Length: 366
Image 1 (spheres, rainbow, N blue to C red):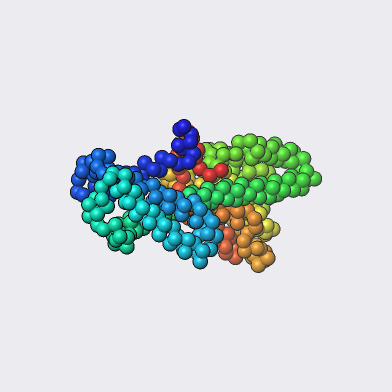
Image 2: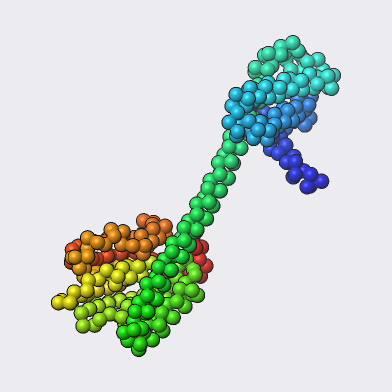
């Protein structure tokens, strides 16, 4: 019985009962008088016709006319059908007046203070306005409900699209980094096997981090910085120390309770190593600084450039920087400032990033 009641939404009748009771109470000025007229007077049948006929009209519109015609853009069919529904509902309510008078055995005019032939007056003054109000209320509730459901679906779709895009960006970045690193180790094998062995060990640590330790959307800042330091050490092993100068300054003590998106810093460092100058007559350099001001991370990377190679470099600086810019937009909206300056002799990047404290449960976008 309960399943039948819920399946066919008969509980809606309760809503319509109280809806009409509310208006009757508002018209009479007394909730007690309205209840007495509904349950203990000669007007019960008329009241039930208001409830039943308008419920039928409303749900015929909501569950048949709107899906079949309105939502399919068949306005020339829907509008006349809606008008006919309102008219039939209103005339059905008038029929309730006559049935009410017949059942209680009181003359129509004596009971309702109007001649039984005054159909149009009864229609215009009572049945039609009440039906239009019920139809308007029901359509407003239905449209609001549909809008909220549509917004919920849209937000879910956007969230899923965002998850998919972030996963794609991370998967796009990983092969890019792996290819560069493997190529560097391959070149180093023929030059210095000891350095190649050290590089391979570092590469193994980086790969382990990439595959097993950073599958969360946000990770402990300490883990990301360890990864960054390993990457820098790997790059240092394959540089010619006689013509290359590297300065790294990391001021991060006591702030390991912060979280950061994985691989958000590394592309800037990778780009510096990729585009650093290789002059034979002067020093080539990379300067990397990182410090924390409360929860704001300030990351600075600067490298020397070869003026002869500047014109041949792609303005987008490759997949890595494009990738990280997009990830910053998605993961840190209104919480970062990125300044990239390309000069003829040097290239510098400054990133200011607002970090959050580590939380036990992550509810961010993966």
